[in-house]
Every structure is written in structure tokens, then in C-alpha cells.
Image (cartoon, rainbow, N blue to C red):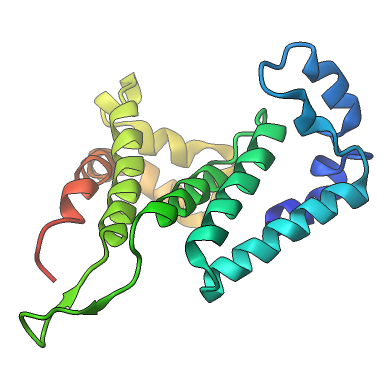
Length: 201
């Protein structure tokens, strides 16, 4: 929400934003979703919609009717994503998934009846860990281009102009280090989903 508000005038505003009313009129012609999502045509209307989203998220976080407020928050978030779906907001998708899980899974913790040292963990805790692990796993298996296979991806990454730092020049010269970092990245991203569930503190 902070990102949306900071970039509201330039991007999300129906009146002045890049994804505003002018964009919407052209986009609706090829859009396959419901056109009524573009019905909010004023900045005041969109800001009111964002405020309603904030309200229900706050009610959810505070714990007032958490399942109901999570359900409404998930719907409002989905509507916002559908309105701006050309701008793929990965963090918004992740938030929508977590809020949706909260509607159906218990999320509280309580002492385990069998032992005073253990707590009953909510299934939601494991689902959240799986979701995070799966994101990294998917990123890992999608890194299958030539540079990842031959171990030069990190070297090329550091060589990009916007990554230039005093230490980078020295690291780029160490082929063994950049190769290690490339393969280590793959191993950690693919292996994280397993590492998160290893029952070791």
C-alpha cells in the first residue's frame, strides 16, 4: 500500500497515472476480465478504495473477526490486482496468497497438551514456509540458461553498470569465486524448500 501511495500520482491515479483512465479505455478493448473494475474514474474514488483496503487489513492484523476481514481483504486485493494486472506486483500476489490462506487455516498457537515444552503450531505456519520455499524453488529451477549452467551468471551480474562498486572489480577477476557463487545460488534457491522443513533448530 505504501508503494501504491508513493507512486499514486505517476502510476495508479485514474486521472494522472500511466495506468489511469486513458490507459483503461484502450486496454478494455483487449481485456478479458470484468470491465466494471475500471469504473473508478476519479482520484478520490481510488483513494477511498485504497483506504477501505487499509481498514480491512488493519482489522485483520488487530484480530477483529480475522477470518471475515481476511476474506474481504483478499477480495479487495484481488480486485486491485485485476485493475492493474499489466503491472505484475509479485509482493501483492504473495500478500494475496497469505491472506487467502488465513481465511481457511487456523493461525493461532497454543500449548501442546502432551508436553509443556512444545507448542501446537498452526498449519498456516507450515503453509507460509512452503509458499516462501516454493517461490525460491521456482526461481532456482528457472535459472537454466547458459550463464547459470557454465557458472558465469554472477560474474555477468556484477559486470552490469548499475552494480559497479569498488569491490566488484576485484571479485570479477576471481573466476573460482563467481562460479562458486553462481552454483551456490542455485543450490540454496532449489534446496531452501527442504532446508525450511529440516527439524533442526
